[in-house]
Length: 158
Image 1 (cartoon, rainbow, N blue to C red):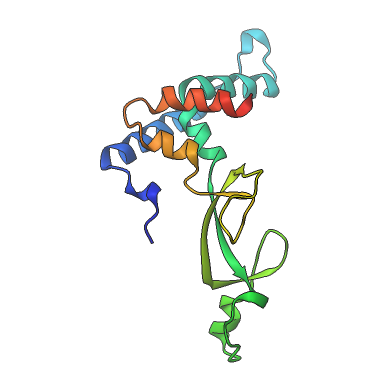
Image 2 (cartoon, rainbow, N blue to C red):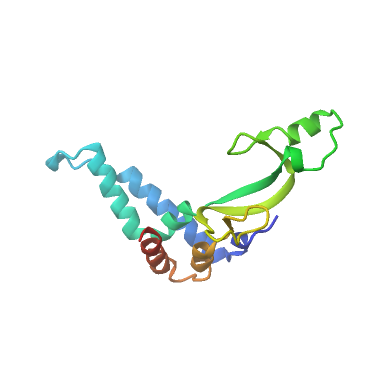
């Protein structure tokens, strides 16, 4: 299945991977500031400030992850033939503990964005289909992703 996010260029994927690797490398390199008797919370805050300043696009991508949406078992229309395959395809619980049919894929929505007007997809009207506007904007700006993401992060928090 191809989603608009998988249509990024090889260079964009490479850049994302290198930036994620840089963030992980920084996390592994960090240690508490012993001269200042830094607490774990202070170290965490220092790390968050560094990531927010250096990799805002990664933060935006993390906050706007896709969630797959499927029909509920009672509305999927599949015929129960009593097979193990049917049982496996209809035993996946959703966020609200209702079982869903993994044969009835509806699409992806953003974990963070909401459509207050209910103009989202007919199968989830108060959600925003993924990729949502912030992710599409980052994907559309291959050279200045971090600059754009910084503006988006500020706008989303404000």
